[in-house]
Length: 135
Image 1 (cartoon, rainbow, N blue to C red):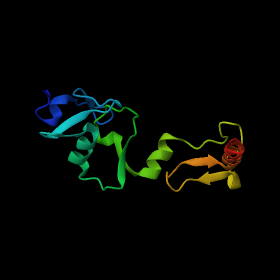
Image 2: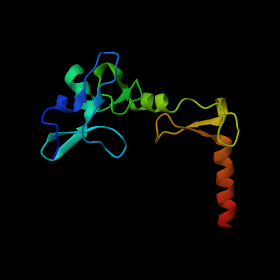
Image 3: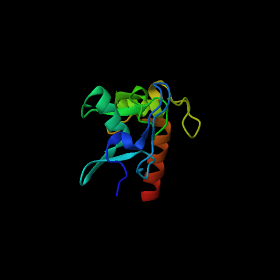
Image 4: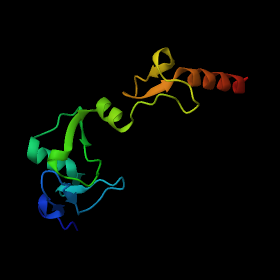
């Protein structure tokens, strides 16, 4: 049974500058979890954000500016689009894993995964390898 009767029972509230640490149940990925209904749980930082700022749109995700997954300080949470969130967590790489420069015509922007880029040279080489293995 959850020890959190109300949301703030499981938040160590500090100043606006400090992280407000979630002390309740955690998800396997490290985020706090809060029971909002008998069979419904949500991420604790989302509850904190919505209590302070109001509802999120379906196209928004929350970014922890402090990079602390257990932080519930609404001043440390920023609503961003999915593509922007990906960019914040995966800063632009100049070279791919095989050392090819990832700029200009050598960059393929995936339509099915916003914000993800692939090296065209590596993609072409992989396709050639697969074709040669198939014959």
